[in-house]
Image (tube, rainbow over all chains, first blue to last red; front, side):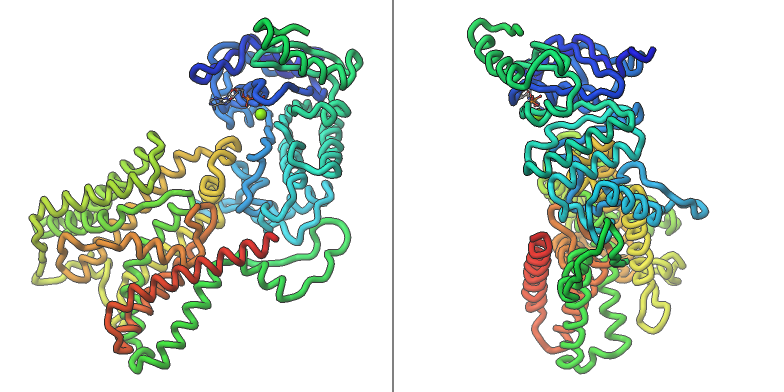
Amino acid sequence: MSDQPLVQMVKISKSFGTVQALKDVDFDVRRQEVMGLVGDNGAGKSTLIKILTGVYPPDSGEIYFEGKKVKVSSPKDARDLGIETVYQDLALIPLMSISRNFFLGREPVKQFGPVRLLDKRKMDETVKEVLAEIGIRVRSPDEEVAILSGGERQSVAIGRAVYFGAKLLILDEPTSALSIRETHKVLDYILEAKGRGLSIVFITHNIYHVYSVADRFTILEHGSKVAEFSKGEVSAEEIIEIIRSGHQVATDNNGGKS
Amino acid sequence: MGKVTNQAGRGNTPPRLSLERFLTWLRRHPEFGAFAGTVVVFIGFSITATRFLTPDSFAGILTVAAELGIVAAGITFLMISGEFDLSVGSVLGVAAMIFALTVKAGWPVLGSWIVALLASASIGLINGLIVTKTGIPSFITTLGAMMFWRGILLAVTKGFPIQFFPKTMPPMFFALNGRFVGQFRTSALWFLGIVLLINLILVRTRYGNAVYATGGNRDAARVLGVTTDRVKLINFVISAVLAGLAGCIQFARFLSIDPTRGVGLELEAIAAAVIGGTLLTGGAGNLVGTLFGVLLVGMVRSGLVQSGAPAYWYQAFVGLIVVVAVIVNTRLRRWALG
Ligand SMILES: Nc1ncnc2c1ncn2[C@@H]1O[C@H](COP(=O)(O)OP(=O)(O)O)[C@@H](O)[C@H]1O
Ligand SMILES: [Mg+2]
């Protein structure tokens, strides 16, 4: 039971019109591991996880979560299963306050007769604690998210996933817009989330960012899985070489090989 | 509301200039600009217009502001969720006409009122369905609806007004827009109640959070589990129902309705919302701002007349206020975010 993967995606295919974004992709994530999902821009990484998180339905293929076959037809379904996603551009809503963002869709409420009103105090206090843990200093959880830097936003979104007891945390290019220092902060925070028992899918096309924290790697190329490795089996340079030559192989004879 | 603490995070927040702190507070409370504008214009007219500082004059302002404000409240709610409704003026006309015709035909007034509101809700629902199902921008969809329903209204009435002079005034008319103290009308109470209710929904409920999220970034809201289409649909209906309510309230005041009633109202309502700090692009705003926005517009309308200025100046003045308000709010926002 314990070596059964947390998530298994089997033979997933997806087309957008004439563009085949994914072809029979198998993908799995074990418990308490960091899975690096890598590949060049347009390889299909985001599409794969959007299928897992209910943003798109797959054309074909099956998804198993904790051994049970599941149908994820909306982002809410995914959240209910314990899958939290932090998208690069969609992590938080800039015009809203930090605490409203943090609890969006899961706000604590208090019953006043027939109406349920937000428990503002609980929201603010929780967010203050989480921000203190992450090391973000703001004057008030009422501040707009717009005042936070890119790295701070990613961290708040990760903190939110941990707070709500996610089992699987998916990060889509969390570091691609960040400074080096901020990237390290986010990477540290990913390891901390793993330490708390979460599994993590880390998507990036920057191999150096993911290499230091991932336990395994899945490499996508033009919508197909071309390789899967444990960290011990390859170096960062080898992964980069596979992604690079995958291009060449794909353009030379229309097929991938590792 | 604007509680500022120094306790977030570890260590001490560096001391801040109090002006800077005030401006930060201001950015989070754009309604303050409309409030300040209201005070300034109020003082101005108190000096220039001799009969401005009288109860009757205040009642006159409130009468104008309340009817506009009920429409603007719905528009604000919808705009925060990221959509427009240009059809509110026509919906107001349609609802008032249905109300007038059915009351005149001898229906119980309460029944007529409910039918008028249901008709408004249906128009809002159609607007919302077209926008959410086809993805056509609400600006276009509701521009079409505005012209369509106005056209129907003109065609059905052949352009003639409907009048209704009952021997005894139905109590429902008093409830909608009767004078309860001096020249003060119940429409002001409707308006105040609606402002408080919608603001409570926005600020203190889950639905309010979903509304801000939907307008702030629809895709982000969606992946975070907010059913954004449903939010928009509901807000289109609310916007239309409030426009319909304003139509019934107006009819209860004039006891007549001509088929051009409400023409141009949509722009006045949007202007009031924008003056109050609601973003045209959605995701920010509140009803307190809109409250001051409509008070400002109402004051300008009566104040100019009382100052002896020709009524034409009204539009020019409101136009000026809108542009100044948006410039100030945008500057403030950009400044505060560095
Ligand atoms: N919503 C969409 N509509 C049409 N094509 C899409 C859509 N999303 C992704 N694609 C296409 O699918 C392919 C894979 O995209 P994506 O999954 O975003 O790649 P990655 O995240 O690896 O950069 C690309 O060719 C992209 O243009
Ligand atoms: Mg991507």
